[in-house]
Image (cartoon, rainbow, N blue to C red; front, side, top):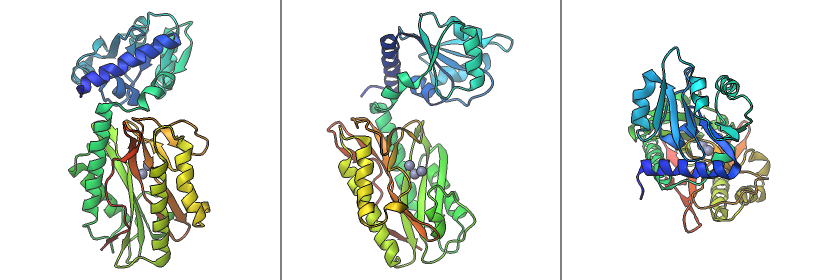
Length: 368
Ligand code: ZN
Ligand code: ZN
Ligand code: ZN
């Protein structure tokens, strides 16, 4: 397997080929997911310009503030640096590096403040968003990315196993959320992204975070959490119930959602359309009579960002390919009562089948 640095360099080579193919003069990437993808350098966005300039020959330079040069050297040791001092014009520096003719692609998530100044420094150029170049690359994970996604998903699985050992009854949702955050970190996450704890009626709101509601015996609880580890994201949902036996309808809905998720897995394979996975999961829920309560798409891609292409949603005819990573997360939400969702991250493996990265048990677990 190639080293991580070699994988990252290869991404730049492939992007440069796309720049040539499309007749672009350069790709300009400010801090954000594309910068991490093409350089391995992770940095917060600030008013001081940091910008990777990739030209169609594959030459890459990171324009960065002098005071941040040492960390760029650590994050992206194999990329040339062009540093600027506090009184220099970083936009002129970046513009000088754009030598080939053609349009200029800029990171989708570049701040408007940076873009407008780069535009002014490059008069006569037309601009496009970088996703025209990067989407096709980022949607198919390379080996280094697959490994990172596998590790972060396993870390989330371990956090789930640990939360099952905690008492739930009598505690507030936010306390369970804090436990989940602690477990994610203890199990290797370097960043906690979100901890959804939707107990009882709160579970019927798919993106309910964790509030002050006190959990009681008999509650059904949606636990959806994730974060980042070495730049890649986790995202897992399991639904549990408090006390010995779950209510009859709760058990029934959980069975339906579980079968819907299995149907999603069965449909997800090389060359299947993204929407066909959604349709397969939705059909199970429709046939059980809960169709109107499945109020979101079946899944989203995941990688450096928590939500990215491909989206498993009606209308998306994009075909699944080896290397794609996405969630399969059907749910049923009964307003005022409870919700159930089961979510794994899955990848399309080299043999064309969908393989789960999350291995935590799917059953309707009992917590105390
Ligand atoms: Zn969500
Ligand atoms: Zn989730
Ligand atoms: Zn998700």
